[in-house]
Length: 296
Ligand SMILES: Nc1ncnc2c1ncn2[C@@H]1O[C@H](COP(=O)(O)OP(=O)(O)OP(=O)(O)O)[C@@H](O)[C@H]1O
Image 1: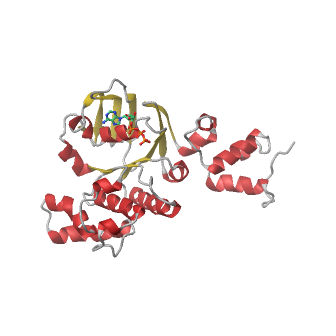
Image 2 (image 1 turned 90 degrees about the vertical axis):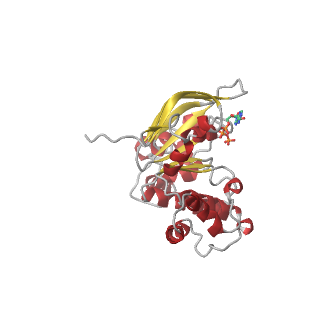
């Protein structure tokens, strides 16, 4: 079988911020493979953003503390490679898009990074237009950034990261401030990136949307990696999530779980996702005659 090298390899990662007694990340290990879209969920304060800062190499270079274990990104050990060098391959969108927007207009904002690397203006513009398309901000080139909505700013922050043509994109709660439509727009942008081969790490609380597009979801609890599985496997036995107040599972999986608990569905029809789940539910509602279900 062909051996595929991971794009990101985290081995025994632990971290404590300087001036703090608390260990925030505790012996975390996982691999992410080329083109994967990996979601990360966890309660507030469980260490998700800290993990992102480690993957981006800002920890330990710009943010100090005690880091144990190692992270390799595209074969480079983050301890050894300068942040600027890693930044060429690894883009990050931080939780608060405001903090990343530096240009007065969209064009200024998007040109900033490549101009610093002395790319010619025509090349910058050629790169910018398809990216604006991708994040659905066509026609926004001269828009003043302070006049943009929360969703537009979040998509601009993604566009900004894409200007550097990263192989890996880390998104830390990119839909935190958004209404359902804004959320959907950002998620369709993320899916598009995956289709273009970008490896994506996505931290979010929007588990329902995440489950639709992620290849795997990692669950962090108090700095430990508690679960690492496909959305389908996670929600096939959702008990472990239901007992946690902080995590809502997709409604469809929750509904099926409830029906299963009441013995209204036979085991073989309980497949938690999308079409299968919807067809099982519609069968239960009597809208499809060819599927049977168990009732006492
Ligand atoms: N610079 C810092 N110095 C000391 N402690 C910090 C620092 N930054 C974060 N922490 C602490 O580390 C813990 C984990 O924070 P982190 O932001 O990584 O969690 P999170 O899972 O991303 O939370 P949220 O979902 O609320 O964004 C928190 O207790 C936080 O207070």
